[in-house]
Length: 133
Image 1 (spheres, one colour):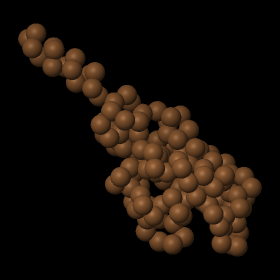
Image 2 (cartoon, one colour; image 1 turned 90 degrees about the vertical axis):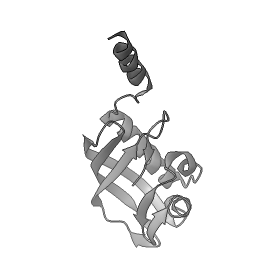
Image 3 (tube, one colour; image 1 turned 120 degrees about the vertical axis):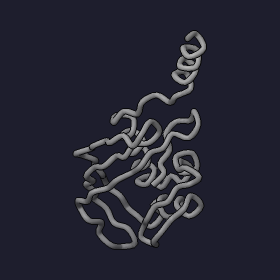
């Protein structure tokens, strides 16, 4: 019995903290801020090594995403996130969905004013959550 209690305490100490919607929304906004300010430095620590995403040039991995997401050919005046929803996908993953409102252009084309987006965050080891998809 004592051994079972000790094992349970070990699991509790090593389990990641439960994700919160506020935490994930803050992370997502940091990505939008980096896009708006053309800051490519964020992406190395923000994206998982297993990252898969899509952009104007098609499918992206962690190596190609910073070029796309640094916003070099974009002029973003403002953005807003709303209607954020979080769904847990187990102890170490969560899906964040939200509506975006963007005022800006990319590649000389006006961005759609409103769209819906989704990001999946995964806790890898004891690190903070990273964007996976």
